[in-house]
Image (cartoon, rainbow, N blue to C red; front, side, top):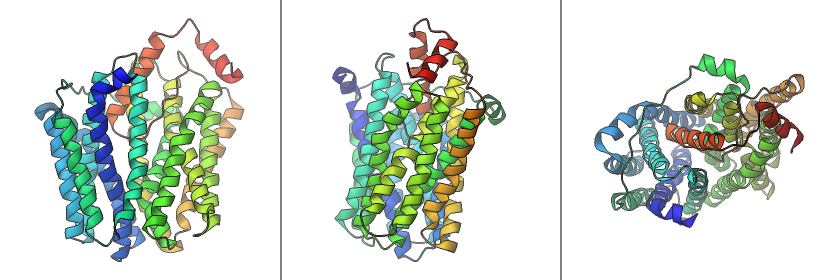
Length: 429
């Protein structure tokens, strides 16, 4: 395992540094915007703007990377992100911040595209799954660690912005010093949304709801904690609790989904996330109840997207895996664009408690719908049941990695028939 990680150490270090800076910025902007008197709706629109940029970048950045190469593209993306972070503190104006958030989304998806295509190129078929799991661990650890950087200085000062920009600048160094050969980015085929709906309607709905929940969490949870009266340390505690919950509970839920009907795992994930959100609403703004509820919410809701991807793969033929995974990313992104703006409207009308209630309103109907569907009919799996891969929503290049892992597993699978695989899932064998 160590021998497979050493060649990509520079990629993982660059990833950690950039996500430390970007993760700090995402939380910081909600706090600073609140201090500047920006309304909840406006801050929600800024969260949506970031994911609009993410969707734009999905189509815009691959041709650029193919033209100028991975190292120069990474330096371009990181330099732009660092400059944008500093501009937030220099020009505190709502429309300007909206434009900067769109630009940040484009640049961040470019960063993910560079790193993940490089990881996919460098990892062998036998180690690709392990490498991707370590990469996801680095993602979660960096995002959790970024929240603790809020303790360094008040959000109203220039210091946290400069720290975030410094982290992003430092992320370039490991990449530009590597001698690893650069890969080529291939065009990603796509299934139409209609085809995805006919193939796996549960996965389509779950991907959108996952985007509604997670896009809103990253954009609005810091503001929610601030509106409850927490200082930067309290905001960091809430965010870290949810992220750590997501990191720790993904794998157990994923293994559960591999052994039993995947729809049951989806219902547990969505229902558990709704329960965690309702407990957040009941906990109020003080005591240990809020971080504990956030831990449960994050642990359940973070697992929803990767289980959804596995459920989608269950219903695809091998030649459809890449296009199906890319479609899941698109649907998740659509939800992530809509979620923060909707939550901002609700918080402006009903106060901070509207955020966890929004999470519950999105997740609970999905859980009920999936559970009723699972009771009404058996799940029909195409070829062979997929294997859960822990992940967070990044770029379409993550779909390439997950697809390659699944294709390698299918090629090396035993002689099980599709019926054998379904029976094993239903009995827990």
